[in-house]
Length: 423
Image (cartoon, rainbow, N blue to C red; front, side, top):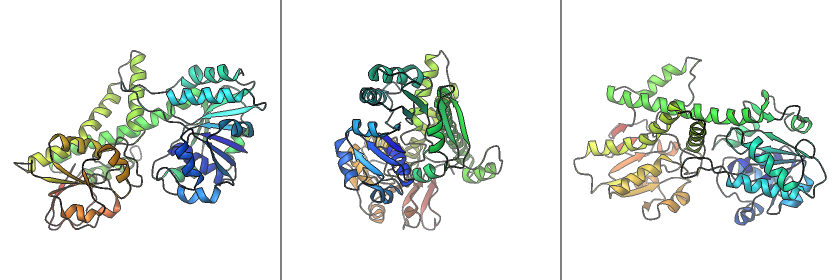
């Protein structure tokens, strides 16, 4: 079938190239002209494993990058909305891009004669689709829901660095819909997938996405809290987590203690859910504490440095790893940002390296010294902070250096003044 994907970010491009590779005809629309120019040249605006290989295979065949919406909508039976939903300064969800997309889709739907199915993949607070999105599309299209078009909520559960694998191998597909919705196109679209498919209400699908992210965030903050206690007791939290993970009620995943979670989803989604709960006169104490633990976790590194040295003002601090996790160049909400900010406040000399995220971090901190080689950074620094678990950091020569390992990356500690963050 023909599909239009609105938004060429991580979710949009993974979705677009995934369906293109399944032999659907996909029009990927974005109003960022530079992004579209890059895609038309066969280049990605960011790194995500596997996408760069799929782009040239499908470009101008099953995948078309476009900055014109009307032509693609007219040719498509399905429209996926994959735009960002960042946080406002007060923590509430920012729906500007959603509203803009829905308005634009609605205006262009006016002249389309065929029935369309619109899929919301962007993460939105429960009740957003039925109370805000559908009315906007109806207003600007002069069309009626379930008469001229249908709307589904099908949240994504991608992990950055592994998003393409998640697309082709989902553990479940959640389909939010209006009662008695037409499912012929949706059933056809997902006919090749073998995972469970759950059909629920629009708001339930929206809440499943938020609840999933909140629970994963909770596991991370929980094990970091346990790790901080283990550190005081002289215990290794990784051994503790390994013993816990054998219990099938707990499982081994998301129990790697470290400097806290980052990325584009967990923090903003927790903040949005907290604000929604508060608007309903409910105080979500557990959700608030997840964020509080996470906000404090990166600064444990600073405390260890101050505890180690009587005088720190002449230290050169080398930060290895700037992306929020390995396998991506994304620095959004990265623990490295909060660590570097505090090091700057202490007027320390900062050296930084990352195999992929240097360009993105340079936009945030243009005045610190960046290295193109991790060993060179180590050789020129007094203290080494391993912040991201890139595998290439495992076997570098750290001999003679004070190393704070926040991700338990190093195996050979011989000759290294080694300090674990939670062990």
